[in-house]
Image (cartoon, rainbow, N blue to C red; front, side, top):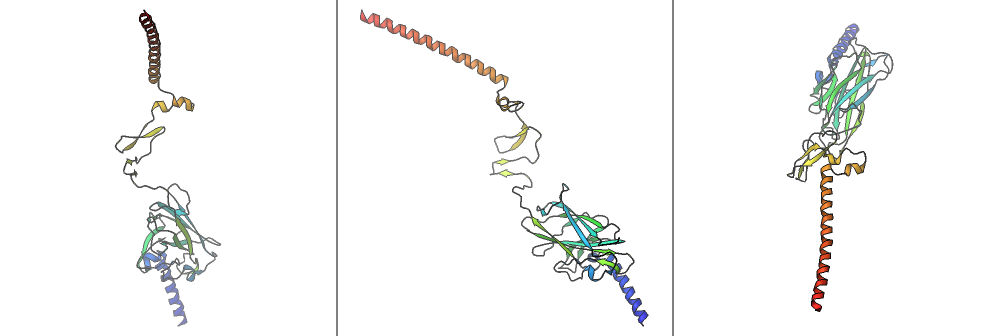
Length: 289
């Protein structure tokens, strides 16, 4: 009888392990990260007795430029990388689960593009259906990646809930080491100016949606449309600020001609004043007679 019980327990352990090996969210509709609303236990409560020490995990979130970030911009796409770390030894396989919740514990796990050892699943038994990223099977690689689109503006602070599992891949749950759950927080970044599409200012100007090239300037058509154009030569090309303020050759020529005309006019005025004085003297002479 005792042998039958041991055999049944062994069979149960193997079936249990295989049932969860392809990801507990997709297989049994459960989450094991420790997030609010989960009814499943933690990995550490079942996967025990291994030689891999206490598991830890490293969560890295990078933006489109490849820089690691600790805050998010609404609607932006980020890459998430989760690495399962053994306290000792070298596990044969690795597993994980991860989800993201807002301050009200609502699902904001908009995941896509998982690595070959990961997948996106829906846990039907958690909070009416919650999105998780999780392993496809016991992975030789301890790193899992996928994309995440941040929620809309005003969502506020978020919490990432995740867990990892280190296994010997023998088909049972003994000889493994499961994690006790981890969290990371992320705040919302509010940009000073962020525009999706054309920027209109006071219903008077519509700015272009593309970058100009070097030395171009913005110009308006007088009807509210602003575009890029090459800078006028009168504003460029000098080695000093004085050079940049100089007029063009044609403008210099026009100015010179105007100066000559003004000087000629001055001479004519002087001559006219002389003739007027001479006329005055003649009138006085004739009046005295």
